Length: 268
Image 1 (cartoon, one colour):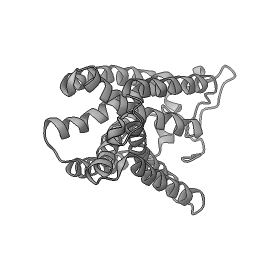
Image 2 (cartoon, one colour):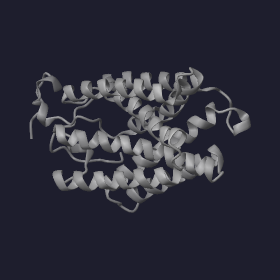
Image 3 (cartoon, one colour):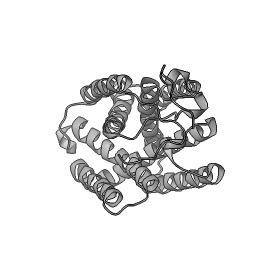
Image 4 (tube, rainbow, N blue to C red):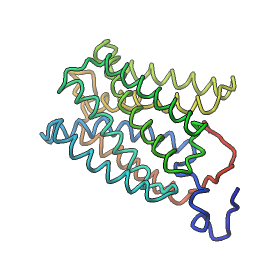
C-alpha cells in the first residue's frame, strides 16, 4: 500500500489511487440529483428544443464519448470530470431507453428485461475477470471500463423500469418514487442492521436510485394533466444542475483520495 506524501494526492502513484469517489452522503445526494437531471435534460433537448430523439441522441452520445475519454485520461478521481461523465451518461441512458420505446416500438417490459440481463452479464464478466465488484478497487483501465458500462446499463434500466411502473402500470410518479424510495430504505436497513454484503448493498442501492430520480424528475417537470407539478424540464434541469455544481465544488475542496488497500465502506 502506497503511503500518502506530505504534498498530497498529486505525488501518489496513479495506479494506487481509486478512480471513482468515496461513498458518502454527498455521493448519494449528487447521484440522485444527476439521475433526476438526466431524465429532465433528455426530455428538454428532445422535446422542448425540438431536436428530436435521434439528433439529441447523436449529439449527447458524442459529448459523452468526449467526457469518458477525459475521465479515462485522469487515472484518478477528479470531481468535476467524474460527475460530468455521470450526468452525461444519465442523459444518454435515458435516451437509449426512449429511443427503443418511441422510435423502435420496444415495450418497456422488454427493455427492462433486456437491460437487466445485460447488467447481470456485465457483473458476471467483471467478477470473472477482476475477482471483485468493489468500487473501492477501480485502479486499472479495465476495471474502470467495467464500472462505466455497468453505470450506463443501470441508467438505461432505471429509466425503463421507472416508466414501466409509473406509466404502463399506472402507478403515477409519486407512488413510483415512494416505491423505489422504500426499496432503497430496505436495502440500507439490511446493510446497516442485518449486515448485508456491502458490495451487493451498494450496487442494489445504485440501481434503484435511478428510477427514484427519474420519477422525481418527471413529477417535477411534467404538466399537472400528466400527474406532475408542471415546473417544466428547463427549470427542473437548471435547478438540479445548480445543486450538482454546488456539491461538486464542495467535493473538490474536501476530497480525500482512496488508496489501494484502504478499508471498504460501500454504504457509508
